[in-house]
Picture 1 (cartoon, rainbow, N blue to C red):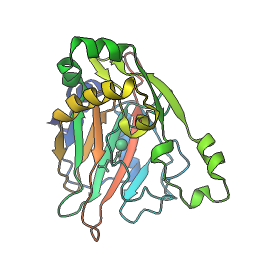
Picture 2: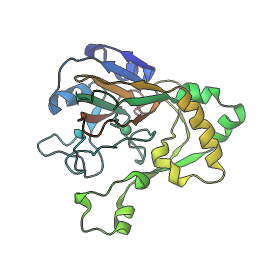
Picture 3: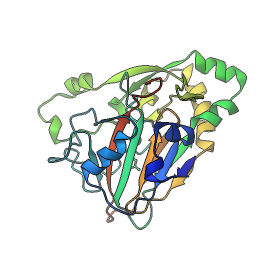
Picture 4: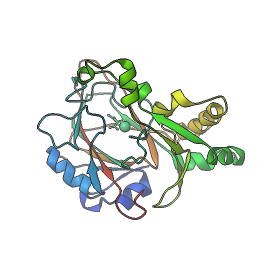
Length: 255
Ligand SMILES: O=C(O)CCC(=O)C(=O)O
Ligand SMILES: [Fe+2]
């Protein structure tokens, strides 16, 4: 699921084929350098919520920092819980580009799981039922209040946060069939019918899990249409500093 490639080999098709690719750059890029990498995949896009946009950075680039204040950088705990990125948008950008600047001596892995073999492993009945299921993806349950939200009531805030409905089974325009599950964003909206089915699907997804242990100066690129991912924890006093952007697939199929 995680294939090591050279920067020159990076393309949307390669990422969609493997789900996740790793580039051992051996250097730390500037935000502009990261955008150049993302441009190989399509159109770079920023984090949609008006947070995590460090001053002086291009608007498409985000920092994830142990000491993040939730305004200029995403705080510790960002991305923990299985998800696909930005699925609370009606039309999310598809690729995520994550670059390690500083990593803890242990922990702080990123976990990945592939939806394609999971879908094949499910019973015929479950596959059929999933094809007839749409899930509500909402950022509400995982949103952290930060200084930028000051002065707004909780109700106001909830209403302003995006949500979108997506079919659970998805035909990937670059090949194959995959799942939009994103439990971090869908969990709150499951009902009696969808929950057991969803849990059986996630059980198969998680069986494909692999943990990636970072070194500084690397890039991972993944296709959110193919894999789920989750950040994991690390020792309290250690720093983990990652730079992140996304890219919209503007090539074949476009979706
Ligand atoms: O920090 C990580 O390991 C992953 C965070 C995450 O979910 C993301 O960048 O989309
Ligand atoms: Fe994520």
